[in-house]
Amino acid sequence: MNIGPHKLKNNLIVAPMAGVTDRPFRQLCRELGAGMAVSEMVSSNSLLWGSEKTKRRANHDGETDPRSVQIAGAQALMMTEAAKHNADNGAQIIDINMGCPAKKVCNVMAGSALLQDEVLVGQILEAVVNAVDIPVTLKIRTGWDRDNRNAINIARIAELSGIQALAIHGRTRACHYKGDAEYDTIRDVKQSISIPVIANGDITSPEKAKHVLEYTGVDAVMIGRAAQGRPWIFREISHYLETGQHLIAPSVTEVRDIMLGHLDNLYNFYGEFTGVRVARKHISWYSKGQVGGASFRNEVNRVDTIKQQLAMTHAFFEKLAQKEELAA
Ligand SMILES: Cc1cc2nc3c(=O)[nH]c(=O)nc-3n(C[C@H](O)[C@H](O)[C@H](O)COP(=O)(O)O)c2cc1C
Image (cartoon, rainbow, N blue to C red; front, side, top):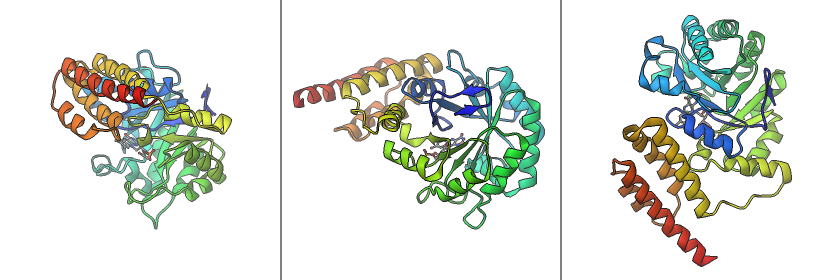
């Protein structure tokens, strides 16, 4: 699949997730088979650009092409400034967020709240496309609520505005994360426009990815929550789509090694104080479903230093690896 001049190595994309898809996680998912990873959302409010958090979000050192950065906001002028700022700081693709139902975002009429105002959507998209000479993509939900599924209208506006790919999460804004994602609207959108369409929502396995690709006819799938604690899902899906066979699940030893490498990158990226705190949620995800995982998480979440966090995590996975070896 192509986005403007960028040819992706496959059609598997990491969904933008605030607080999750930082540079270390994006790099890890790319190494483990994802064709692209969209960065966490960057506010269009320029007052925030100097903050440590926003500067870190705009850090792409060593990241593989293409680097896609998501922006959010509800004013065309601020969005164009944000797009230019990120393009100047290494973004190769600008992704506009009209898919996030978070109160913080929706109350200021950004994220999925914008879907209510199609004229404003057109104004923002056109302004951003004209402001930068890199491709601009858009992420939406299927509509405002079940009675207002206007994804097809928005998709047509996007195509006319020069948007180069459209990602759709198969839920309405009102649905938040409730119920199952639906793919009928995504299929209808795919049939209505000719720019690449990316399906998103509840893709949790190789079979589901194949089903969604076939059912909707889309060009790519985007995966968010299923990659938490399981970044190797991308190579699993890629292998299954290519061969129809399942890759063997990673051994505990491999999971441990992937996780320790991930933690190391988090510590380097954030420093000790924030690194240990960001690492907690990833350690929790990696240990989910493992024997003794709950009490391990309870203890490891209380420590504050890299040394303690690494020692406890190492010991927990070492014990699991020994059990796995005995059972083999
Ligand atoms: C923790 C978290 C943070 C998210 N942050 C964003 C965001 O910043 N921008 C956005 O467009 N979507 C965001 N999303 C939505 C995801 O990109 C995706 O659309 C949604 O999780 C559905 O895909 P999934 O079922 O594969 O997780 C977020 C989702 C989660 C779980």
